[in-house]
Image (cartoon, rainbow, N blue to C red):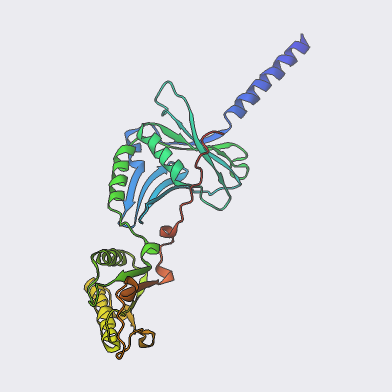
Length: 319
């Protein structure tokens, strides 16, 4: 009888241990309350858009889209206490807590490292946004032996209040300028033959660069190099190159760029391929072009806008 009692105690202890290990997790999620809708917020301008969800007691998740000819998107997780050890963070879509029936869908996973905020590439980021737009919550479990004694940490992103903030996020993306610094830092332009007027296409390119310069406060120098080989005489080419440089400079001045920040590099007459006694005018595109280069103040560069947006977490739904 005594042995049976001891056996029952051991079995009870084993069940309790399994139960405890099954629930050995720390979950961070919003309450089922209308005020939880306020956990979503937006920030944005013509260079970037962000959609932010504050995860109660944990930190926040930040979806970002950056300007450029090809828009770049990603998501970063910002835990208040950081990441204590290398591990894997999984992304699981499931119905919110107020639903009685629920099934889980594994969207993907990423590797996380101590000292770095978890980063999610564009493919997995859009999967997460798609699930949220369909009313599902996102669980992001990972293990951390240093900060949570080996327990599963499960921050969650709630769909409450998502749609309104998401619509603002999409509207912000439509307003993003379609160039970034890498697109405009070195801009070639083409003039009409024997003229200081730009071709229609080059005028459009110049307008894009001017628009970007107004938005990026780190740009502190504009260098203009204008060329002319399309006249028959050396003197005429030198004069035309000067007029072309001044015409471009005027465009920057009209756009509000300080004259102190603009430099025109003089045309090198020694490179001319025309001679007064044997005129040879070149009307090709390369004979009537200009090159604009931009420099920046490193202290004023927004490093967040320089993100490369690698596709971390893509094609990791099955694991």
